Image (tube, rainbow, N blue to C red; front, side):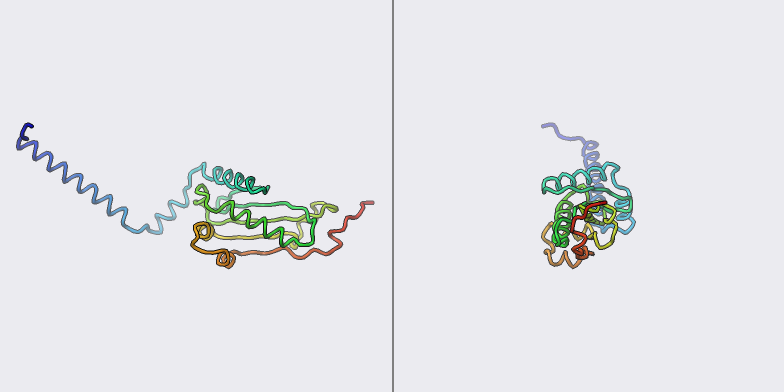
Length: 187
């Protein structure tokens, strides 16, 4: 082993100090709490491919769960999921609840959807006899809205089903009149 010259030792000490300063600076930056502007900047500039990846991940999860629905994303950070169902039973609430929970489970845990802020699920019912023209009635649709943070917390076990239900803004469908469910011939 060849001994180092005075100049080589000096260079090693300077390089060591430079590395120590650089590591300390990185450590301090990582330890500081993010400011509101940091969070706004990160959430306002998502990857342009992220909405498509999120929609595909949700669609795949819905398909795996045996559900079919349309998935859209909006620029305001909302994921929209819509199910169109025929009103074939008198208990639309049960059908709406099942579709809503399937949609929430499809979104929960999707890493591609973390840049979004809200999930909105809409279940629209139409009469098989009268067509989709009656589906625009407010009583024939159920809507649910919840924050992504609450949904992800639920998926990680941070809150239970009851707590998520309290945080969910849910408007169930109104009970249908029997005349709506009865098929009538069109003259």
